[in-house]
Length: 472
Image (cartoon, rainbow, N blue to C red; front, side, top):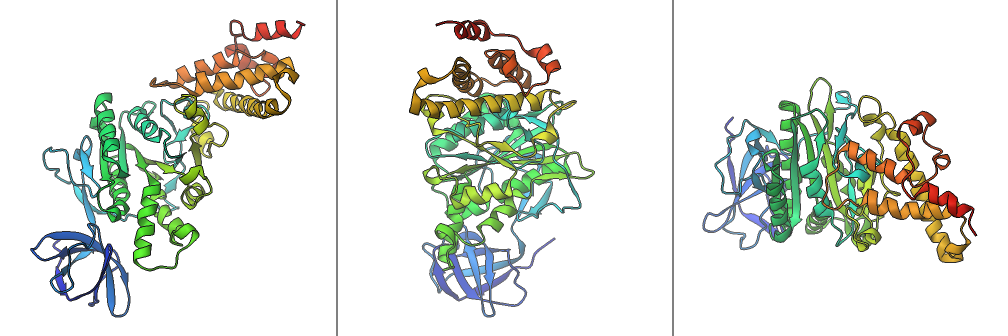
């Protein structure tokens, strides 16, 4: 369909990424515009706001070097659309979906509105089926499920980028070959972008990854478009082509900062910590595009990475993200300081849809019981650490010392896995090795028949514990 282009002259105001021009009939919110300055250079934008006499245009490249007299605004008559195709897999694209890897042009299968919509609740199927990430602390304790949205909360300096790359290259659905990853990087430094590209190439999985890159020196307002382009491609692959799609978005905090910058330019009344009052709604327009649709085999799973400023989980961006999504994975600065990778803090982590993707016929029948037992013992060990700072380790009983030692072993051997990718079977085998360090009678959350099949005392573990119990 050919869109009619109307040209408007006489820009009334320029402010940061915004320009104001006199309104004409038939303009719609979200309509794509082309902005031509002196010399004919083209910039892109969209209609952001309408009132009785004027319209506000958001210019992705900013308004620097434009002037009021010579600037021309061209209305295209439709929203910003992205040409999508499976050919985009294996390619590196900029924040607006244009190839930047020097490869051949992409021939789109169709064109789609990047704004998208949340899945209609009546058409939404319940998330199910386990996604194996290769990360033991996630796979066993906080399992990711097809169609889920599960954020990773991190702090400045923590290895969230490394973890995101590991998940993007190592995740798979058991028994499903058509599993692909869409990686959207927003406000990323160039060295981090180079790291992502090298990680995907060295893993041999680049052919099933589409990488959208909005660099730190790219226009900040373009960051608002990057996740929408990535999700638009993901919807095409999932719901048109029947693929299982994982969308990794990093960093959502950079997205929120760009949204605050835009709100400031519009002179809006600020909300919490200067963020706009519609931050929750805006984030929901991204995350709620995840899910499954009745009658279609594909799925769209979202894994956002959120940096918590000052490690504050109550900051508006992680706080509101937690309300929209179905759980969280939290990284620990303490574990990172002890060289544990990935430094996942198991206690505040949660996957609300975990039970839908585990158990008989999906992972292992004992999955829930083993996860509960590990969590309970580790929580008790963390409590004992705090107690030791008050009364000293000598005041603990022998059984309490075993649990205290278990907490250390759990962090270093189970959570910490370095550069190794673990299959689910390897994760369970390691879990049973760690549990073997404790006497069987202390594993009260695991059914007896499961203990009969899998529990074995570790060398020097439970047996030595009993010996110390009878010692001086």
